[in-house]
Length: 195
Length: 195
Image (tube, rainbow over all chains, first blue to last red; front, side, top):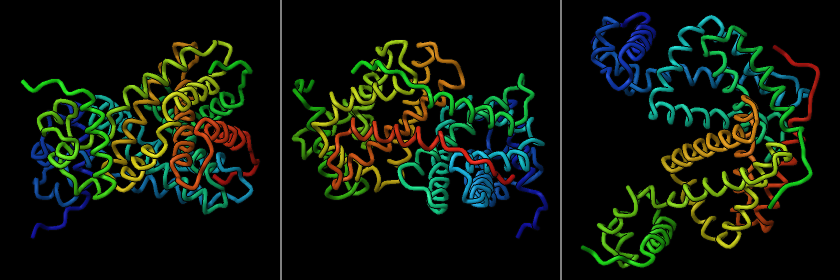
């Protein structure tokens, strides 16, 4: 039995992020990640199913945090505002201090179609969980599903801008901006539509 | 050289849909699909990369049709209305007459996590193409991305209802309903939000 490694998971994640940024995701092996972290391949596989999952290790906690923060909003708060508030609370509590790592991670993901697909699937699972949370708050279908997807889109648009190194706004502020833009865009109507 | 098979692709798709519905996706082989269609495995692989792709064969044409219909909307039409009009045009032209097959296909997909993931990835690619089309029409970012995702969500909510056997509304009518519901839901605001 290997001795329990304090912080092994975090060290592996940090090592993976460094190597993926330096060499690219495809050109990095699990053995190299373990070596950089000063650990064994066996330890790696105790924490992560594969090389890809090391990049998505925080996503369950992220989903749970967002969902519980939405569930904690007063019932009088409109569904879309509750979703935005949930994302903003998690942005403040967990994201702002990790902007540089989040940016590097985002660059790694964008460079790999396989990782982009994985992220899309995670995003879809998040939207499903948010929709279920909105139903628990009393929102009807299909509004629950529509608002959940709208909220997820708002967050991801904000997140993409926040991880752009040229942007210095806070993630929570960018969520508010994207929310306003979605509201403006959906409120616009025009009368002449060609079939 | 095998002789060219008229309609081979369509026969394989129909056979696959029948077998997936009868036995489930996981319990059906390419050999069985080919046999049911009166063709060979080799012919199957001339048209489709794998067993999964036979279910998504129409998706490129679908994407192109939606995108070109959005691009054909007058510039005065608001982005979200243009997206909805694009989906409705394709709904009328291609979907209404194939409701039963679409429902069966939807049941097959929903029964398989692997197929649900594939569908999510296709949906994401569709949203990307729609966002690009909206940018070509002069829409700014991030509104283009937000409206594209909102439009895709509207269509998929409508599509899910349309493929429910208990629903008898037209797909175009369900798109309009979902669009109204999205607009109502995003227009709602409440003043008290808990951080």
